[in-house]
Image (cartoon, rainbow, N blue to C red; front, side, top):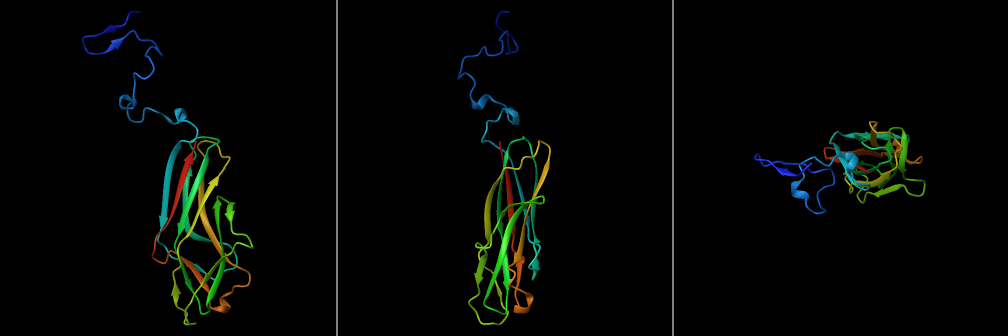
Length: 190
């Protein structure tokens, strides 16, 4: 078939692959024309953000939810999820220090946790008046190889607990948010 330029300005008769390399540039590609399956490995497929300002506090030495969570529906099997958390912490104590563990969980699977030699130790340099103390946020970035198939929804959240030696008898408690915002960002990487 011969190539023809029609009166309407359209071109007919060009077969697939008939244009020379470089003739179509980025400006000529329509918005959203490059679909997810055509994106290369390493591309960011989607970004989801979650946040909370709801206060949660505990004196428990068992793991409890801190109130920060986010969900993402997988677009491509074999992708990875980058989970970034920034969590506001508030401490109340009649003693001068507090020690606790923190972890990131996907559904019911721990993907990162402080170990016995990596507790989060916070020092309150005040008198024993039971005052509140707001240390810097607890921040963690985890790259998760989830193994889920496309269309699966994954929920990520943070949990915390005291070390076994820390009890409410010491006047300790730890809280999250306390009116400040905590955030979680989930990015799917192809």
